[in-house]
Image 1 (cartoon, rainbow, N blue to C red):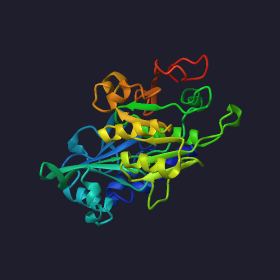
Image 2: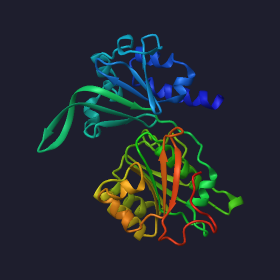
Image 3: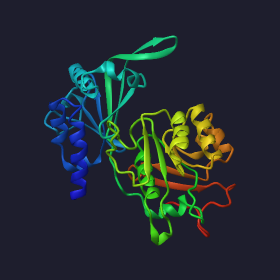
Length: 336
């Protein structure tokens, strides 16, 4: 219970800095059960204030109660959106101009805020967004629940780290699992004969380590180096040249340059652990660039996530049948 309270208190303290006081009080005054399950806060101009709880959501009244119909809920005002947006940018929207082009901003604590509005387009490229109408605050929670027996899947019989791809749809806990894997690999477990490895993390969206001004707000282990707010492709190569990692970790592969950097890392003898958005492996195989990596057997193991039993549900662990050296002797893939 104390651990749960500490977790709720942490994200509430961080979220309070980017929400107008009256909105924060509505959320903070809900039950502990609701706050413990909250994964997103949805603000849409003229629409009900919504809390997303895993696979469901609830509308909230001005008195922090559940609203059964929109007319009973607190309706988000345009000025609520404007005030929240300014707080996100610390009242200096110009200073965040480059980050805002992507349609999201990562704030203190690793919480990602997505937004929509009117796009300003120049030469077929989005230059900025104005007249913001919707905000989605995705609550980052650092939950240390990674089962240590994942080492039996992540390591070969010689304790070498397998090239691993974590596959899941959005909101299924892949960033949380990634953090826990980094911690496990960065620490030593003498009883298993594992002394830990040097881990380099490319944290393009500042979500994995939730860095602020170069300081990590999430413990990723004693042998972990983080390159924050750096594009994946450039960051992977920078880490290999500068920090000599044994493992490189990054999230949300998708672009051609990402795939090229993964190839370079593997050719350099560095293990790679990464994530990708998809519902399953077969679907991911059809995507350009990352599908090529799969077809060429660059990955040893695929971890499939869902939110069926809550974010971070491991549905399946798949060994690449072409990688004979993968896995401990006698181990077979199965759901943990």
